[in-house]
Length: 307
Image (cartoon, rainbow, N blue to C red; front, side, top):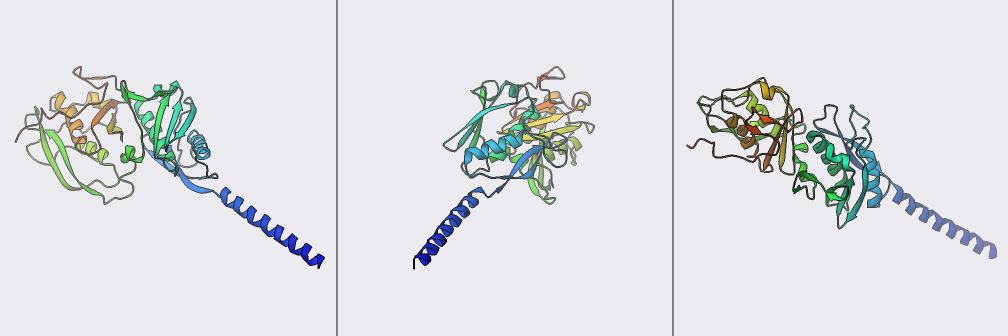
């Protein structure tokens, strides 16, 4: 009888240890997420599957931030966070992650900064305990433009990087602005059920402005030789980067008509309120010595031809 009791006790202990071990194993099981990297051209994001091993939110944040500082495995993807930019630390409170960077973050060029910020936000927002992300630099709220704090961001802050995709049949209505016959005013140009394919709506708009109007009574506002380098949207600001041809190649319209054909056309999209135009990522420019591009521009309806 004693032997049977001892055997039963051993079996019970073995079962208890086995169940406990299974519970621990379940906690250590990895869960799939994506880490976002900057593509080789530096004008968009690619994502790669990544597996985190912890269910603890703070551990996941640490793990993902570390992954964001390394190059990707595929297609020459580059680290979202550049080598000289250091994450000083982070704080998770009430569903909001505040990520603090060193002062080098403020030195990033416009396009590089947008790509970095988008990759960090789109990666961290996947964590269940996270509702939004805020950036600070040396413990001070990050300001994209002097006096304007960036605020809390989530996936919707970077809609242009999440749409388009591989849907070559994507369609939408667009309202563009080309020059009128004289090139002295803007004139509304409607596109109904236009196929923008696998481009973002922003890229489709700018490339359509470059290709020019297909109807009589309109004047092209951008020369066909102008080269678009990149376009992206973050926190309701659309960043449009051209190469030097934007300054060299002229069309037959006034300078204001050229600039605001871009601004007004993009601002017709619901999520765009301002447009920052750069040349080779530089915004410290006076366009033909008349219009400053140093800060984002808002739409100008005063130069639109009235019907």
